[in-house]
Length: 286
Image (cartoon, rainbow, N blue to C red):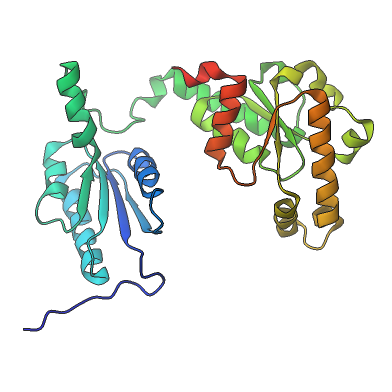
């Protein structure tokens, strides 16, 4: 009998589906998997399946994986973080038509041998968050960053770990929130505006805290694109205005001795790590 072949989806011949299967949120599996997949030029379809903490749920995921394998004509990839052996064995068994990359078996078990102790086999990274001071610190930092977004408030800036400065729409807000959520950093952000350029100095509210300031800049062409999405055909978004503001902001930060970097071709993770390295290196050791 002639075998039946399945063509991959027409959207991109090199695509394939990647599953992230976890008994917790799946964030660890997805973060690790994305880091590995970033080494390849393909752009897979991502499917996260969190809270797979029973055999029935595991079988349902295997059925879904097998459906995709049949439809696409190639086996999916599955990054797996599962603690329970009975659940994990279903994903790792011969019935599952995926390349299964078991992170616990690859890392936890060798560490158990090396350290001479068993892991606690805790399901989920955040299962005891309510009792975690680090979790409380992140919540406080998020609230602080939201309250001090875009210069909304100059109160309590002495409590800030970092104050991001730069022109409007250069990436200050997402960087502030990433620092808060991932590192528990109280990050305020403050826009540099034409009045600051005319005065040739930082806003008065920031002067006492210049040592906490870190600048972001951006290519004017990219800034014009971003601003155009917000306010199409405005002087605010014009390339001429963007060039003037970026040039003035960089000159101001240079005069004030504020370190800065361009967000144009850097990820938020890279920007945040640079800020921590330069202003709060203690947060890179924990």
